[in-house]
Length: 153
Image (cartoon, rainbow, N blue to C red; front, side):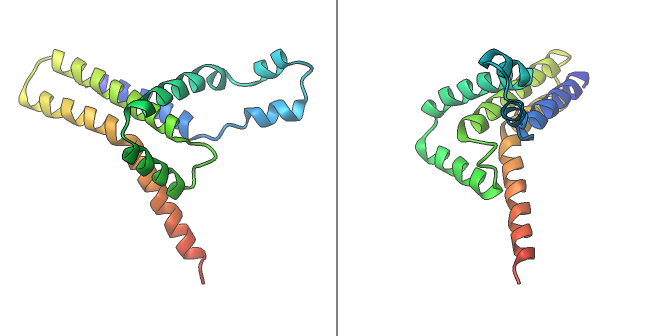
């Protein structure tokens, strides 16, 4: 059970990073650093390391994903109004990352003592990891639609 809590905490931190909009490039532009090295150092470590790794993973996954699924994911991102902070590669990378974390937590849970309850818990962890990004995008899209409906006369 401790592994499940660690998984949820780690997944929450990654999701928080993914959902936050990056303002570090604006700070780099505003500061007008003397050279490119200083500009790169002004960006956070997350923007310099984790971001590009996730984008590369997402781009590789895009090649393996059917075009219809990519189009559906693009539509969810647009419906949620996240085109400026999200792209399909980022969504696919997060989906893969959460699925891997869920699978690791599920394996750790099964190792502690396989029973019917742990098998069900393990399946739930993998499912939550796989569908977390879709759930977030659907929820954000619904909230955006409700906001637009409220703004209409």
